[in-house]
Image (cartoon, rainbow, N blue to C red; front, side, top):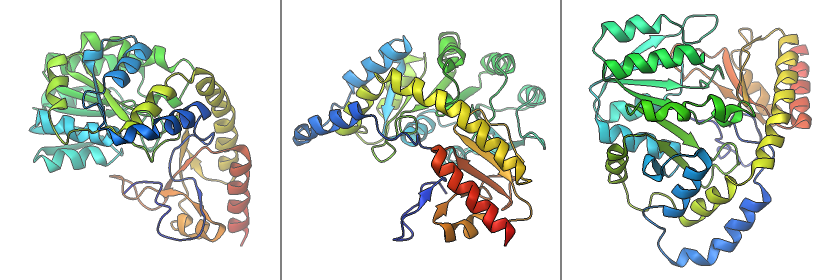
Length: 347
């Protein structure tokens, strides 16, 4: 189950269920898509040479470390299909598609449950890695749905243990670029050369508001593995319009900074207002907020009467229907959500 399912009704919904930049598509990206329309008479570049070069320049890494795909999910499934792990460890609650990709390839999956009330990865994960025979670890940073980040020193220790024990690490940083203006400095991309067993998953669809185009990529310093992943799955995994959109998007530094400055202020506002409604709210670093409303297990259904769609989280392992996730949208849209919640509570 994913957020963003606005298609079950013909009514127009205000979508808080998908964590997409509320600023919308940058104009330069729209222009690039329009200008590329005549090019769809040709097959896309199967090697994605231009897009990989732009990504490599953006992150200051070799092009040989990059694999592009039809969204982050495509890259995830192709990576698992290439590695074919035997026994994977997934800290939960987290995004369920990791487990789907692993089980589709007959991998045994073990959950490591993050303790309440924080739902965060702690040092207690370390002995679990050291005492059991795992060959694959999934880490989501910041985590989905909580929005919490793994403390950097701890993450490095985890990566070092996994390198020593030959555990492959899938590190999902799809929302990392939507946490902080200086996020690039804290990304593990800067350390990737030292950890050829680490694969970093990235997405352009959220930050640049192009989920309908599907554009994701992965980074790993094991260039032989990257070549193997390219050979798995369908050819032409990135269409022409998604490719040019990605190239244009990564040039939009002003757009990115402007959004992140807005996000820092608006997330704090929405966090404080949700707490005033007596919800338990987690202090997210991402562009979404995770909260619990035990007295409203059908909150998502009630908000449909206000044409608001939010994400209930009972499909995440260890969570029930009292947990929800909402995107940080424009101030006006956030005010409407809060007003709707207050009116609903007062009924």
